[in-house]
Amino acid sequence: MTTHSGAETEAAGARLAMTLQAGDVVTITGELGAGKTTFVRGACRALGVTGAVTSPTFTIGHRYEAPTPVAHLDLYRFVGLSSSEWGDLEPYFDGTICFVEWPEQGAAWLPRVRAVVHLEHVAADTRTITIDDADDSRV
Amino acid sequence: MILGLETSCDETAAALVTAEGEIKANVVASQVDLHARYGGVVPEIASRRHLELIGPVIDETLSAAGVTFADIDGIAVTAGPGLIGALLVGLSAAKAIAWSRGLPLIPVEHLHGHVASLYLQPTDLQPPFTCLLASGGHTLLLDVSDRGWENVRIVGRTLDDAAGEAFDKGARLLGLGYPGGAEIDRLAKEGDPAAFSFPVARVPGLDFSFSGLKTALLYTVRDLGPDAVAERKADLAASYQHAIVRALTERVHEAAGDRQIAIVGGVAANSALRASLPEAIAAPLALCTDNAAMIASAGRYSVRLTSPEFLALDAHAQSL
Image 1: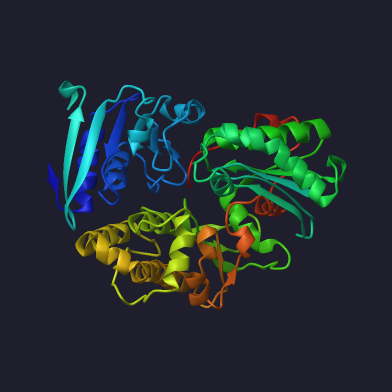
Image 2 (image 1 turned 60 degrees about the horizontal axis):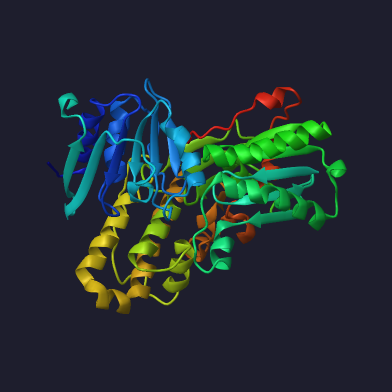
């Protein structure tokens, strides 16, 4: 699909969120500025997160209380992922719907992924979003 | 004297601060140092590193100040927000020391710590003031009415990327080294801040948005091509930095009105930001990035828990 504003990218995240349940892992890939955090913010809003949803690049992980808790991870700062680094991240997957930005570094460790989202720059505000869902019946 | 411990993210730190706010020792084992020491090999960002370092860092702190545990009357420790496993290392160490020495434990908000870096000697700033807290993970405008944390009001915040993250990702787009903020600051001194115009989104109220700025730089870098980017790197760094600094400066002025302005956090070390807010009280450079002196300082204005009350204390990952 193609979106033409941050609001439309958020709406795309919200639509995916409505198909998710506790234990689901969603990876989000795309270059810097492609709209990964924007997409996750839309999903978080739809899942009932009311506070600020900001980039976890430096903090690595955010966990939001909501009817189903939501985790938002960002592996941008990792170079590969050691077993002890994975050990630190594991609690964020526990009972949550978990969104993972820059998942490439954690490819060997991530639990089974429910949906794979990829965002691409087209023009200033235009993005193409592809979503590969592991379970099409729930979309 | 309060022993402060900080392990919320990359830094393993301990410090000793007196009741009057004098720093007796301040030790930070930083990932940036390790990064340099191991020749560019990025050390793991994991609680295991904190676990290896916390004991030696506390020992070094005590010996630097020439004191023992007997001279300490409270342990202040960052309880959140941060990476859960990393926080637990500091919190567990603090509980163990407090329990075995019969000392009170003082849980501290990491962000309160940044503000409390201003309460140390010789800065010793008295509220009220408007505080810009800008780092890699956070960008907040705070209305500070007293030295505690309960009455601090958040009046503005970033809606997407933190200012420090904008610096760091901008540096990456320009092919600069790590840490990116310091690299941009250095290179910008040789460039023209008016060479390029990078728009910063104006969002309602006193909030910030830096995500679009990063994208604007990306498109400029693409349009210029690698040769022109290499040639004009200093101009790009100066213009990009100018856009971030202008956005921060405008908002902090709007929020403060006639009140005193203060700046804390890693971005407060940026020379252009300091120059553009000459009237502001800035945290000393050594206390801008994460450290434990600020945590011990915040501990002076926070609730002391006694045993066994503090044994049940948990870390919290939640962002504000």
